[in-house]
Structures are given as structure tokens and as C-alpha cells.
Image (tube, rainbow over all chains, first blue to last red):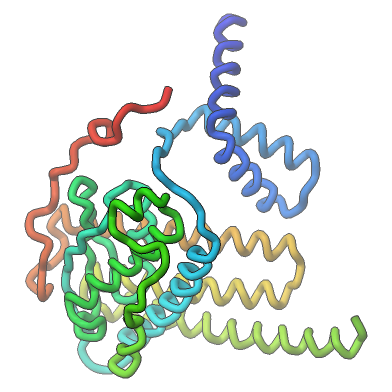
Amino acid sequence: MSDQSLRELVRSGLRRALVQWPAVVLLTGVWVLLWGDVSWANLVGGAALAVVVVTLFPLPPVRTEATFRPVAVGRLVVSFAADLFVASFQVAWLALRPGPVPQGAVVQVRLHNPDDVFLTVTAVLATLVPGSLVVETSRRRGTLFLHVLDVEGSGGVEGVRRHVQQLEERVLRAFAAAAVLERTGVAVRPTGRPDPRAGKGAGA
Amino acid sequence: MTEVDAGLWTTVADVAAALCLLAGAFLTFAAGVGVVRFPSLLARMHVVTKPQVLGLVLLLLALGLRVRSWSAVALLLLVVVFQLATAPVAAHLVSRAGFRTGKVDETGLHPNEMGEVPDDDPPASATSGPRAP
């Protein structure tokens, strides 16, 4: 290997690291956390390793109209934590209670916005929150296929659909740019719709 | 901070840690029972994504409350983040593989809106538009 090509490789690596600097910062942060203390050796070592990683394992850039709304993100986190709690104890109860175990159902949910990033975030969150598990997705149609463990307990098929769409609205409110919200018809502020969890507590 | 305060907060943290440990252990136990009892692949995937994840989060929260060092808490937080990010993906891949290879018994699903397994997704390069250099 000549001196020239090596220099070329290093240069393209550094260029990529400059473009993908958030990934480098994130990986460096993970490295420092893994070592457990902040020192120059850790910072420099982590940054060097991060540059190597983004050079050797390049990812396509994510193009998306994203933003960050702190209040909406807070709302998303709180409602997600509450949902995760409810979902965990529901499934734990289904596992421990005597009697037959439900077989479940598969429900299609069409999302407002089939953008890759929001589809991914919604799918991951929908798997963690009440009753649903993403088994298949269709990018082109922007559709999630969810397995639902306890259909009656989740308010029927329509209840599941509404629930996941509300989850997606919260995700969009937290991270999507104003143009996306306008295009998909999601209000920036939540409307005065009844909370889906409010009426479900007694039946669960 | 006075010594009385420190003692009080230590007690509060210890009690909270004990409660979190118990709750986490219960959920993890229920997840184990669910894996054995649930009849189908998909139902089992519910168990590994919900009670198992929250059980681990609660156990680590208890550890953080008990250990009380920032570097340990940061590391535990990292574990939680990775767990939340990877458990759903793993469950999704297992369920999808089960569906596509016909290992899922679809007769027990009511309703079943799966239809034919969607194969309408063209390769990523065809839909994601021009890539940045």
C-alpha cells in the first residue's frame, strides 16, 4: 500500500467524520460512559475510535424534516413511561393469572407520516407500550402490522388503532418539523380529546 | 447538609431501592413464567419486550439508588437506553422471521389483518432519493 492511498483513506475518513459529527460525539460519549470517568485519554481515544467506526461502517445520511420541541418531548416521555408501566403489569398479569392465555390478533395501522425516522420511532415505542408488538412494516404504504395480545382489554381493534395513532401524533409533535405537522394535519398542541387510558383502567 | 438530613435521605433512597428491586424481580419472574406459559411465538415476544424491559429498568434504578455514584448511574443509564432501543427490534425481527417462514399459527389470530406478507417495498435505494455524497 502506497503512502499516497493511505493518505487518501485518512482524508476521506476525516471528511466523513466532519459530516457525521453528531455520530462521532455520540460514540465518544458512549465510550467515556463505558470507561466511567472523563479523562483526556478517554476523550481522545473515544473520538479516534468513533472516527474509525464512522469510516469503516458508513451509514446513509438520514434526511428528514426534524426538530426538537422540549415540552412535547417531555409529554411524550411521561406518557411513554406511564404506558410502559401499565403494559408491563398487564402482560405480567396475563402471564400469571390462572386460566387460558389469549391468542391475540394482528391489526393494521396506517400512520399519518410514512417517513423512515418517525416510522421507526413509532414502531419501537409501539412495541414497548400497551398490548402491541410490531411484526411487520410497509414503508411504502406507511403501515404497521401489530400483534395484539389482549384485544378486548385494549378496547378492540379500533381502540388499538386509535392508541397507536395517538402515539404517533405525540412522536410527531415532539420531533417533526412544522411543515410535516401541517401536511399530516396534526396540531402542534394536543387537542382536547379524551385520554385513551382514562376509560380503560377498570376493564384492564 | 446536616447529618440528620443525610441519614433521612439515605433511608428514603434505601427504601425506594428495595421497592424497585422487589417490583423488578416480580416483573422479571412474570416474564419468565410468560415465556413458559404463553402458547405462541408472538405472545412470547410480548413478554420479552414489556415486563422484562421494565423489570430490568427497575432493577438498575434500584442499583443506582443504592450505589449513588454518578459514573455508575451514567453506565446504568446507558444500559437502559440500549435495552429500550434493542429489545423491540429483536422482538420485531423474530416475529417477522416467524411470519415469513410460516412458523406462526395464524388460525388462532382473531382478527388477522395480516393479508399477504407485504412484499411491495422496493430496495432502499429506490425510495430514499438521491444520497448525499
